[in-house]
Amino acid sequence: MTSYFRPSVDAMVGYVPGEQPKPGTNIIKLNTNENPYPPSPDAIAVLRNLDSEWLRRYPDSYANDFRKAVSEVLEIPVDWIIVSNGSDDLLNIVMRACAELGRKVVYPMPTYVLYRTLAQMQPAEYVEIPYPDDYHLPIEELVAANGAVTFVASPNSPSGHAVPVDHLRQLAARLSGVLVVDEAYVDFADETALPLVKEFENVIVIRTLSKGYSLAGLRLGFGIANPQLLSGLFKVKDSYNIDAIACLVGAAAIRDQAYKNECVQKVKASRAKLAVDLKQLGFKLWDSQTNFLLAQPPKGNAEEIYLALKERGILVRYFKHPGLEDKLRITVGTDEQNQILIEMLVNLS
Image (cartoon, rainbow, N blue to C red):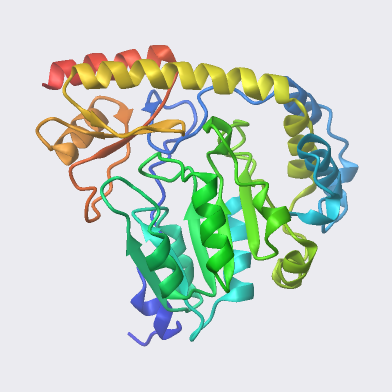
């Protein structure tokens, strides 16, 4: 059959998201790093009281209501903020603005495999620099690769580790291209790279409301960078990439820092307990500053355990990628969900 697609699209393998059962399905879902707690009551109230006029009209193309909320909370000027349809949208915007054939995309591996997918879509050459066993940022190799765009997820998935901000600072100072610090999991971490955007005009910090704010279904993310860098990104974003509902609900959610922080503390406490329980079962774990744990079963039979848990109504994430075939990524659920997981693992051992 004749192909209708660009050669780069024919050649690529599309990104495969984690399994999403229908709402109401009797499944313990620990595979896609959603927050186990509901969104802010303030955000729910906005949704319930939404004026239908917001649906009839086109939304603000810059999502200024949400930008103002981010500005208030993070004490960043509004013109240093760009809003996107989830942080994935912003990753794509950066790629479209900065990368092409002859302009490389660079990142350490293992990490979020969407970076590879977006590079292939562009298309652009991509360079994957292996992380060492201790997940120390390979600064020299990243600099030598000379990317037009360099992605560093911190905290990283699937490892869960955070890159020290000073290491990111050293990298930013030596790169000629754009450094994208993907902070999707920053709400569960000890520090942020946000100060770097004031120090370097080539740094953008990207965040999402999917994790810490329990709004994965809303699809709302944002980036913070020098307005000079944002000017090129605004040129290539979709005209109305943020819907009015997301803008209003997201503004209410991000202003409710007390509720978000309360949920984050519960997740952190559950993460610590789950780590202890898994170690007692013989799992090897990596230190995590996220809402998930990377866990290696004592027998290395990760795929077998993944399939057995799935049959019993528990979803965790298994990646059939080099270096990850013997590991599972387990989202931190509620204490009750985590306990059911542990009991199931005991029965499987």
